[in-house]
Amino acid sequence: MWLLAALLVADSTRAFTVPLSKQEYVAVTITGAGPAVVMIPGLFGSAYGYRRLIPLLTDAGYTAIVIEPLGIGGSARPRYADYSLTAQAERVAAVLDTLGIRNVMMMGHAVSTSIALRLALRRPDLVAGVVALDGGPAEAAATKGFRRAMTYAPLLRLFGGKGLVRKKVHRYMIGASADTSWVTPVVVAGYTADAARDLDKTLDAFEGMAEAREPQKLIPALGRIRCPVRLVVGGVPHDGAVPPGEITLMRQRLPLFAVDSLPGVGHFAVEERPAAVLASVQRMRAQRALLLLGRTP
Image 1 (cartoon, rainbow, N blue to C red):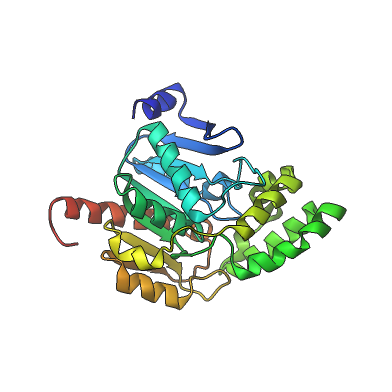
Image 2: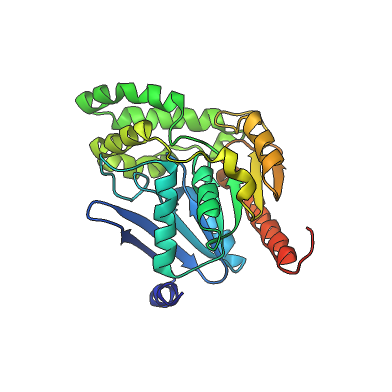
């Protein structure tokens, strides 16, 4: 905890990298003071994607920490690295160990929910609860659709694809949102800035994700996750939604599971209804407090 305190004393907001090996480093952003909420962006995310939620968290008395997994945001993008979700969970654990903090509320978006769940399974000392933003217990870092899309990587390298990437991300965000007013050229540029900065390295990392294989299945082990898990889902049908079968598995196997359904919201709750996401964090904190008192929420 002393390192975290030193960083916050030095500046109210700090963005830095944590070296994990010769080729690997992970980007971290820390703001605020109080109980820690650790946010993990999804495949096409970064700390930028939480820009509307972070002020709400800090105003409510939380320390907001964004840890960008390897290959995402401002983190390193080595081609020949282990991009499995299990390895990403171990990297998040290494960052938290470096900062010296425990019992944090984890927040994962989309596939990064599986990183948070794996961390809760492997390092229960680090995780007090998981807020899952439209994500479930994924068993692969990349979906079949993602792998198919990566077959076009050679063309992107050959012709230069920054403009095409922005168009694809823009189209995806429109299809995944209920209220699309937030999807502006400025926002799309913010989401894609890190990826577009060095497209070759980004494609290297994405190819690594497409090829990654998990050393351990998560779904059979869900029953061993003892902390509360709260799934936040948009109530409007949208691209990128958690498959109903995964929600059923979570409901059946997780000992402490709840769902917050947000009417009029799609895949990007942190963009469309950040205050509702804060409310889910608050409910998680209250649930955790009751558990510590030995009461059933």
